[in-house]
Length: 332
Length: 167
Image (tube, rainbow over all chains, first blue to last red):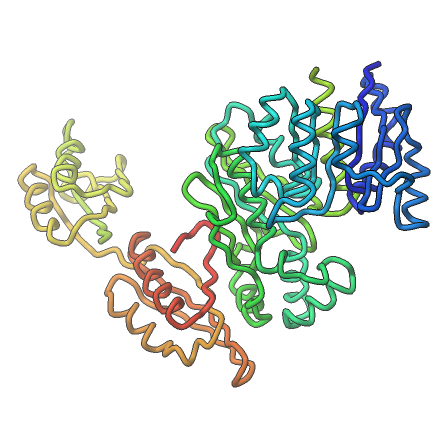
């Protein structure tokens, strides 16, 4: 049995989802000869630490009841720098302006020779090359499937399953909130403002929805895909971005009468990174509804491959984190 | 422009080459060839139908070269409006002089606005329009879109294009 000492840095919805999945998949992981031992769980107020393995169920209960997992006043960065472990699961909130704590955590993990699995887009959008360089320098593994499309596999699909294919372009719906809003506007013939309010009430849109509806989130994911799969050195500034705030119910209805739905589509190729509302034929593989994400990968040998799945949600995102974790240690 | 052409070939070997060579010499782009092996005309020749793209000024030379090769050119017709596109425009579409935009596209001669649906929910509210454009080829669709893009940028309209189309 191979023991992997792990920290979970960031214990919001995603971090808790990871803890739940690690608990429910304990036996399965053992069947792969993997004993994933979480030695520290950290949130913004402090940490629970036990080198023999923290009790994840107790952490989840404490977080629910008291709002924090903290038993000791110690930051994620200190945990990464001072505690001996192999893997950092980085699930702190994304910050696309500075990279936030996530960037510092990831760099510290690589400097101390640790592997990183993350769901945090910000640092990858801003400093992809630097992070990859740091990971390479220390021989660390760096996986980030959960940053694009939640549970829907795109990065590993291209890098592993479609290995050997030259990828020409990827097009898709990479933001569930926008997809929900556009789908509901069409169903209810309701205005953007009304459906946005409904989405906020349901927790599908954030209190400040601009990150989603202005296309920023989709653009960040395109940057990650451009860098990770096309070998580009793209940043957010390279993306032409138009959001969905101007879309009217009349436009959606007219499009439908002519056999189209309107979707916020992100497109990446070597030539162009573009986020814009697009007319998608109703029976096209990309015309998925609700909060679903979808991506169509155009490859040289395999032709077009389309995947769809839930783009958000703690357990769905944790699924991508888990598969990254398994793929790192199963292959060793 | 896109041209359809009906030819008649003699029923002896090597005739197809004589029919295609002038196309290459006149830099015409061959789109389709339908060769009716089983059919015979009353003149005992074989009918062949071509669709090709060429510059209008090269057409007479092409016909002359075909005839010189012994290939009979029975019919030449401009093949109009093979491509079609729908575009949604959102914003103050009416105030932008939509008629003027349509005229600009129609005046090109290679593209035409064939349908326009318009919805105006209120005076201060943005309108939505769905415009269908037909054009003789893909390149001409792009040129029509460039006109729409220009208008959209100037009048702050959101232009929603079909997936896979770049303006």
